[in-house]
Length: 131
Image (cartoon, rainbow, N blue to C red; front, top):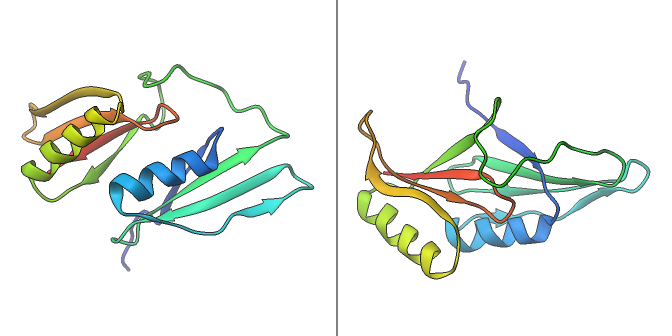
């Protein structure tokens, strides 16, 4: 049995903006939008070359709890994207910074030996860029 995380899901305000961000900076592919008007639900899957996916969802009938952008909170607090090399981390961090994307930390070597930067996506989710 091979167990892997198939996808993570996040509530967002702007599905298209999140899809554009991950497609632009991480070479992902965004699938078509699914809508269920009866439930006030819409979603799209973002797929990465590794096969990992993010489901981005919006709702008009629920009220997901909002947290401040980048806040450290209980539960899922970040996810990490492996870029393959320290140079790739440096290059993407520089590009993101030039494009006005918030950089929370790094690039740096962490106490446990990783080389990473921490950024915020357009919805304020923490994303680690790591070698």
